[in-house]
Length: 437
Image 1: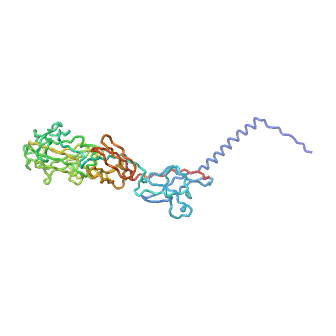
Image 2: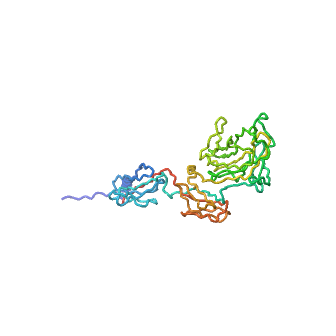
Image 3: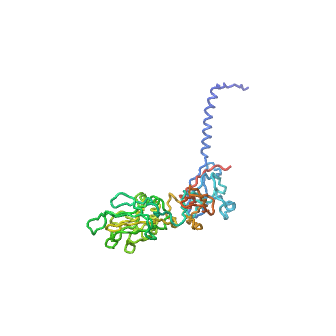
């Protein structure tokens, strides 16, 4: 007969201590197992030329081998993403993509093998209607003149500069001397600064300097003209008595902030074929780079050169000085100025828009030519709602279609938004992988 012997039982405190040691180990092992199976969304690189349509496969990894799904958490800034079409996802037949692009994020990928279609813009830029430009100004005028000084009442803020003197106002003459010269301003060269002898040129020349209303942003004058009338009542304008033998600069346009604040000066030089003889003459100088303007090299040993198109536009967009020559001869003279005007042109060329203002629209609205409303290629202009008076600027509406220019007054300023089709740097989408349920 076997005798059963009851083993002594362990104290309760010892049993609880052993359990408390085992539980953390079990929890740690469980956490390690879970952490080891956290899925990984792989970083991928795809090449997409402008206009290309490519299929992207979002790849992931899981230690347990569980099937993964992909979620798009942000959209690319250069191009569009599409879900696969049902026929391509199941059978590989065209078309590859759905009709509508993915518009919101996060969005779960529905195509087989976690695939989507990426379409890059033809211009390498963002999808149409995806960006809004900075505000742009549209100047409305009753005729071709953007700015005019007729001197009917006073000198309108014009000054005489140079000749070794401080800037001073010209004399206003409220009389008429014919059709071209009526109510004008004039300056007198009473002090002669010769370089060496009686046959030498003036060492210091004087100019008519335009007031603030002709300065600043005059981009709309590009392609237009600068018009003015000159006349002389006193002085000898014989070729032998002209400063620089008649080869000085008739007009100077300056922009002190252009070329990274180095400044740009453009001049319209006089010559044997383009001269002034002291008679009452109306000048019309085209405001474009092909009209004979020359750029100051800021170096006496270098020649003056023809400005580029965008240099000319940049000067007109930030004019700090507009001067018209009054000192033509080596001796005493009196020169009058009348009817100075800036006439509008076709507007800023598309190539001269900078990245800082990628979509300032080129568009003009003239009351006398209300049907002439054209937009630069590649830029969509929103419809315009113009103010009924010039009392305050108005925001343009952003609903497509044509605008209405009725009721606008001369000097009205209208702000307009346009959409930018210019390219941007491609940013890849960020993906997250989660186990498929």
